[in-house]
Structures are given as C-alpha cells and as structure tokens.
Amino acid sequence: MVSEGDDVPPERGVVLRGTGGVWVVRTTAGETREAALRGRLKQETGIKLAVGDDVVLASDGRGGSWVIVEILPRRSVLARRAPGGGYGERIVAANVDQVIVVFAAAQPEAHPRMIDRFLVIAEANDLEAQVVVNKVDLIDSAAARARFADYTRAGYVVHFTSVRTGAGLPELHAALNGRTSAVSGPSGVGKSSLLNALYPGLNLRVGAVSDAVQKGRHTTVGAWLHPLPDGGFVADTPGLREVGFWGLTAGALDHCFPEFRPWLDTCRFADCTHRVEPGCAVRDAVGRGEVSAVRYESYLRLFAELATDN
Ligand code: GDP
Ligand code: ZN
Image 1 (cartoon, rainbow, N blue to C red):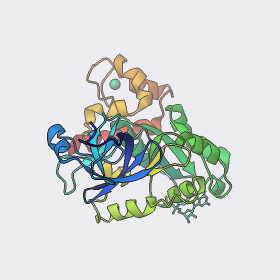
Image 2: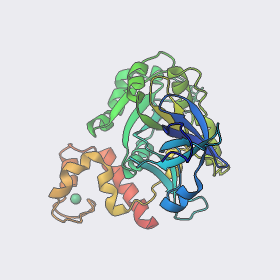
Image 3: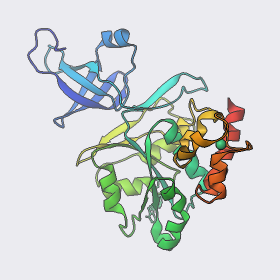
C-alpha cells in the first residue's frame, strides 16, 4: 500500500486526535505525524476514521507529508448517539481496552446507583472496567473497603487511592501500563489529579472536556489519546455518561451485571427478567446473599429506565 513512486516505507501508528481533516498519528517508533486520510479510503470502506484507530501511514510521494492509507481492524469501539438526539452511531474512540471509573470515598461521596450506571455503560460497550476509589485519605480505609466490597465480589478490580498520600498509585499505574484506558467518573473526584500525579507533564484536560460536554457545548470535540511514557494511552473522552446506554435494551441488562451471569441460564424461564418470575435463580442468589442486594436494586431501577426508553 505504498504510494506510487515513493520508497519511504509505510509505518504503523495510532490516531491520537483529529481536527478539520488533519489527523495526529503516533507511530510505533514514537514519532508524532500529521496526516490526511486518503480520499478513496472512506469511499472504498465506508469506515469513518476515529481516535484510537490503528492505521498505516505512507508518504504521499511529494516529500514530507503523510497519508493514512489503511485502517486496521478494530478491537473495540466506544460509541454514542449522534449529537442532537439522533440514533446514528458516533464513535468516540476505537480500540479502548478498558474503562477506569473513578469515584471518591468522600467529597463527593460515591453513590451505588451512579457507580452501577458507569459500570453498566462499560459492560454494554463490551469493555472491561476497573474501579478507582480516590481520596481514601478522607475516610477510614477499612470503612472504604467495606463500602466497595460489592464491586470486588462482583469481580471488578477496585483500587483504593489517594493523591494526597500516594496510596494505591503504583497499582493503578501498573493497571494503566501498556493499555488504552478511558478514564471516566463524576467531576471533582480527582481524575485530573490522579493522572497528573501518575504522569507529571501529561497536561490532561480530563475535567475540561467532560465539563464542556455536560454544558452541551463543543459536541464535535472528540476524544484525545495521550501516549503514556511507559507504553499505552489514556483516552480523555467525553465522559462515559454522555456515551450513555446506546443500543442497550432492558432484556440485555442482566448480562451487564457480571455477578448475575453464572445464574442466567438456570432461571426457570429463558426470558426471565429477574423481577417477579417464579424460579428466578438471580433472585434466589440475592436471597442467599450470594449476589449483592444493592446491586440487584440498581438492576431493577435501570431495567425500569430502559424499559420506558425503548
Ligand atoms: P476531576 O474533576 O475528577 O478531574 O477532579 P480534580 O482532579 O480536579 O480534583 C478535584 C478536587 O479534589 C481538587 O481540589 C483536588 O485537589 C482534590 N483531590 C484530588 N485527589 C484527592 C485525594 O486523593 N485526596 C484529597 N483529600 N483530595 C483530592
Ligand atoms: Zn431470573
């Protein structure tokens, strides 16, 4: 796929961001190049280039400028509804490996419903999620662990961190290393502080972007990918909340609670919604204390919400 009459070898890279037809691509060798998308590519494949895409760059043969000549298959997509309430898919970022949802132990205190909402959005996008409980310096650490035990039991990795004391930072650093992570969570929980403590000089604009999106401005601003000094990327995306429950139906919600999954095939009815049906294995597991009653309550509320939406 090398351009005609050019002997500069093609290079692999990852799209970091794009504005006005100019895409910033980070090559495997660590160089940052600006590139245009080869015009024919969009027509031939129908694929819209997105931040996070793995691409092949070729020199345009005129010296100095680069063209994206191939988009490699995607491992995952984080998508949301088109701005303005339409239903067309809009890809926020491609090839995200995991979602890191950040909450605070206090100031602001995390509420189970909100945590579950973020986790369900990650699950609905088929993305692995890890939980960060930041600001543990503000409360007793045993109390923090007890409060978030439901998430550990559900199978999530939970990091207890403090930017102030440095607690949990090495473990979080290891979890981000070499992977593409979308960091999300309510504002004020310490997302920017955490990332700046882990990667000084990265100049993340996490707070700035999700705030702008919440106010309904800059809806065309896409994600940015920040290369991490030791490998991997952090996607500074419009918050997951804006991604929302795109494409999720009430009937598929049970699969978004990982701890329900072992029971789903044993309910008496194949289409059990786990609310009122007799012989429901999920409700039985809640009754025996094997599935958290708080998480189950979140399921019921989200089910009601999705059932009225769709
Ligand atoms: P973001 O909106 O999620 O990016 O949150 P920020 O990083 O802007 O942090 C919000 C506030 O929480 C700031 O005043 C921070 O100094 C404070 N903060 C962040 N991390 C911690 C922490 O671990 N402990 C305490 N006590 N405060 C923190
Ligand atoms: Zn059931």
